[in-house]
Image (cartoon, rainbow, N blue to C red; front, side, top):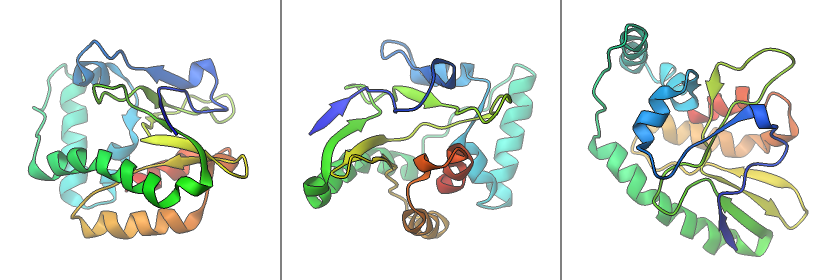
Length: 180
């Protein structure tokens, strides 16, 4: 049922970055010039999150870096992600032909997508948790969120009501909103 590492369908060669499982993820992530969807989404979570993002980007521009803060909420979310995959499969396996996780076996994300719209270059890259093909042959995204944040809980509820963004050429615009 579950496979690791297949690229999302409909994404061209110049619309994704493939992480190397043998290199430090944070170094690879810092090397990307695009904003992360979670970073952009954090702007909408309030002044503190927006200030942190702006501060880190200004420092990055000058070759400095804000040390990564691995707090309890982040650790909890990472630990619960695999449980989330298992629960998702337990509940919906009858409606899924195949599920593709966007992670290597060691937990490092595999692909960062930056879908192009027209001729422009997208400034936002998105790393989804996985994708699957349902019994109707449709491709759907899987984004697992485990958070105590009430902002995030209501945003995830809204995201789940909205539908499958792969049918829209503005998929990444909406994905950024889903990351909120």
